Amino acid sequence: MSWQADKKMDIVIGHMLRTGVTIAAVVVLTGWMLMVTRVTGPAPGYHHFHGVPAPVLKIAPVLDGVRQLQSASIIQLGILLLVLTPIFRVVFCVFGFAAQRDPLYVTVSAVVLTILVYSLVRG
Image 1 (cartoon, one colour):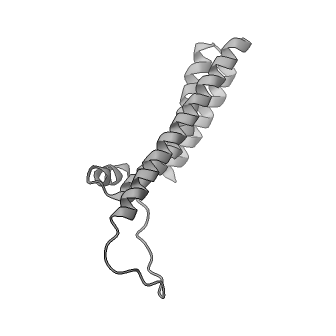
Image 2 (cartoon, rainbow, N blue to C red):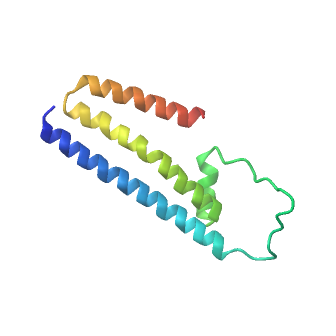
């Protein structure tokens, strides 16, 4: 692998990670602003603990909530985007190393991608 190709890949990966984190932050901030502006009713009492429902483990309910502009779903979408950002980075690395014909790094990146996807799907 030439140092120019390596440097170019590093720059693209850096831009990809910054863009992913920025988009995720904007989505979470948007959901938070909707949540704060839509608060109505009496102030909550904090004398007794009231749990929240279990986190949504499927993407479809989150997307349905985003379509309905539910603030909690928008925040969950932002967190999902934040989690997917490094996965997209590894996908890019698999293709980038394949284009550079580097079988060792393709194999390592593919193993890392498999582990990431498995852990995301299986929890």
